[in-house]
Each structure stands twice: as C-alpha cells, then as structure tokens.
Amino acid sequence: MKGEIQNKFAEPEQCPVRNVLDRIGDKWSMLVLLLLEEKGLLRFNEIDKHIATISQKMLSVTLKGLQADGLVKRTIYPQVPPKVEYELTELGQTLIPHLNILVEWAKNNMSKIEASRLQYKS
Image (cartoon, rainbow, N blue to C red; front, side, top):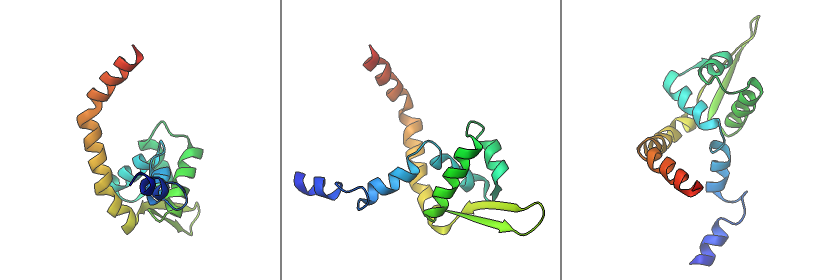
C-alpha cells in the first residue's frame, strides 16, 4: 500500500494533486479565483484594487497561469485604450465549491492553528 501511494505521487508532472495545488496553492491564485467568483467580470485594475497587497507584475503572472490552466478567461476588446476583462470559465466555476470548503475549514480552525504555532515556537 505504501509503495502504491509513493508511486502515485512521485512524479509532479503526472500527479494531478500536486499539479493543481502547484497552481492554486500559491499566495494569490485562490484569492483571484474567489474574487472573480464573488464579483464576476472584472478588469485588471479592479482586481488589483480588491487585492491591494499584490503587485501588478504578480497579478499579471497569476492571471496568466490561471488562464493557461483554463480557470480564467481573458477577453480583449479592440478599442482605444484597450479594454481587457477577466472572468471564471466553466472549469473555474467547478473549482469554487471546493475552495469555499477550504475557506470555511480555515475560518473554523484558524484559532487552533495559531495556538499550535505559538506552542510550537515555545
């Protein structure tokens, strides 16, 4: 059994869990996904304003990664100045309930985690 588990998760490129968590487990991706779910269609600067602590470069990198994975759709309107909007794709929308479960778990357990961290430091 142990060997099966080790083989199952050994190769990052072949492991769906590691592959997905590498993308959404970074500092910003979940926040962007949850924001787009809450607010719907948003422009780059609107996302930037809602997540004030993210740099524009990091937001750009995050959006490109989410777009590459098919979780976020980018629409460019040919006008001057150019207008670009972001929204969740159908695939991205299917991820939201799972993220919401994690958010709820984090809310319910944050005090225990903080207490454990304090105890660990001692």
